[in-house]
Image (cartoon, rainbow, N blue to C red):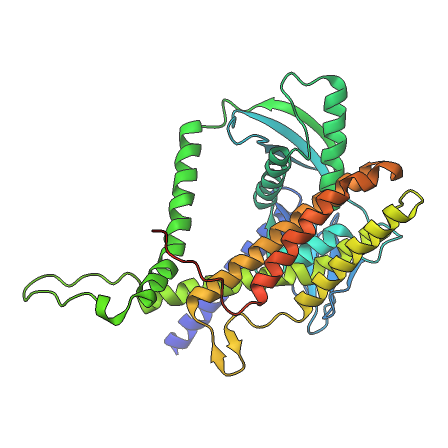
Length: 395
């Protein structure tokens, strides 16, 4: 009897600890957490917004309170803010930053799905149950650095007031279009006392080493499979230590699992976001004339075909219904999906720039749209292909 009593006490203690941790997460909404997944029956705290996604991906927002979530539905609770984060616009100058104050947009009555809701459903819901403010700010910082590197946004040194207003307007439109948030304030800030440049360099080197280590097993398997039988390593002499294999089955399985997870997340984003992106591009006003109309319609047709390719994309692990695909080509396919997702992110940036321009200046960016559509189509074509193009060794 004492043993059963001990088990009951331990179970009660564990349940209390879990409840306390959950209460801490709910209390952290609006501070360190932007959004949190809730189960049916849980209570959303006051001042938050509950978003419920059905099995078809349609979202509805409700007031805070007890969550009513049917089977197969997913519920998130987010706090609209305001939030304050520090961003580093230039990776080479981490001591200089931007202090950003933003809020999550309220529901727009003229759209079927809010942009922040789509972000939660497409990028957060597949693999996470919470959206920390630090993770969101890291994603926004990477987006900002990419925009500045490509020249889509301009932030020159000794910025004039007109240039600063143009940058502020571009940043606000980018974050509204890409993430569904509105910038309340953005000011330069000196981060010299908060950022250790030497530590930043060490972290970048560690990340590069981790990425290299993650791709090494697949590369080693590829090189070993390409060796002819006569090139197999000779047996080691008696008493010599056995050579460590380049890739064990466990590391190969880990690499395959990582490729499968990233590929599924990327295809999910493409499946959910491409139709919304196409819809937003379709409603853009253009100048009268056949040239702009034909360019616009051609762009929409290419995006529609890209959505069709995503809808009919073959499984990652199979070359044919009865032929499994090797790990090397699975990794290649996952890399092709990442290429398509990069083009998708750049298309969102292009949409933000198009929305800021007057109607008569929008056709000037159609050349960029053609390039991004070509990148998207290339990534999807490589993802669909069973094997990559053969590369002859350099002499």
